[in-house]
Image 1 (tube, rainbow, N blue to C red):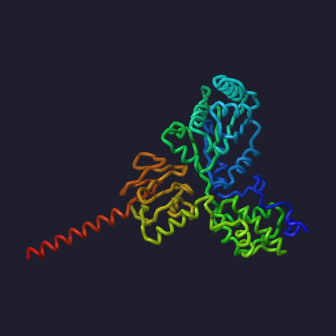
Image 2: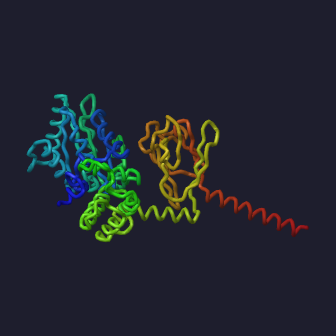
Length: 413
């Protein structure tokens, strides 16, 4: 009996090869795809999607491409360690040209004429760059210039950049400020949470032909999440190895012992440093245990204080979805509206592509370094940021001064 027959499967559920049929639509993946789709109906569509290695970016792109309408012409460039000239050649090759042994100026003219021609024929053109974290600054500058090609009415090239988290860091460089200003939407795909991970596993088993959702014992999911960190590729690797371990022992259900046997086989540690998330969570937990809170957030509405919370170093999400650390129930607040990121030295607030934006006074901000006492507006709500360490230091200073005054009074007496 084969592995698949033994577990009542028609195909392998945890293959590492990207397959749109197996794509699990977490909230994050659905939002990322919606952003990709927006490039089609926005004339100036320019979207950046980032995510950890194995988070499903390539599968997401394949799903997006499989549903593209006939009036859309697209090029996908995946080899990104290129010079500007090589990059233009790669793009033109995808569009059906033979652009080799031509100077850069001629390549640009070919691409420009192609885009104008497609626009005249009622076609929309999308350029998709996968593994975009490998693009050097000169190529990114070339992409910025391409994004500006336009007719008298509108721009003619839509762009999607997809890459690992390093792409976010590259785009935040001051040298690429002009490029970032062209980007309409940015979104980062994070790891799956515990509930999503279980749904992801059960979804893949169902697509692979398993009717009953009883192949993995309920107790296994916590262990899988602890060692995979919720990253789809690591989940696939661990689950596939666990199935092989269970099959070798002629078991029909995967239990915790099989997961641990797979972990030993793979020589993994808890959420190994492939993502780094486990270490970050540990650091935040240690900070929380030390009671070293670095930010206090008061939520107000119409002058009334609704809540006051303090947080250790780390990332805090603000939004109307109950899974956020700061939950604001308001139609003017997006599900995941903004994030607060703090370390021992500073705290930033960053807009997560919300509908109504983040404001400091009358000024809309995308990313802003907070100062103690700042008041941030989200819709009809306000967030008042305070650094509790400054408050504590002031209180200690006042206490010391009072002590000195008491001592002086005693001496005077």
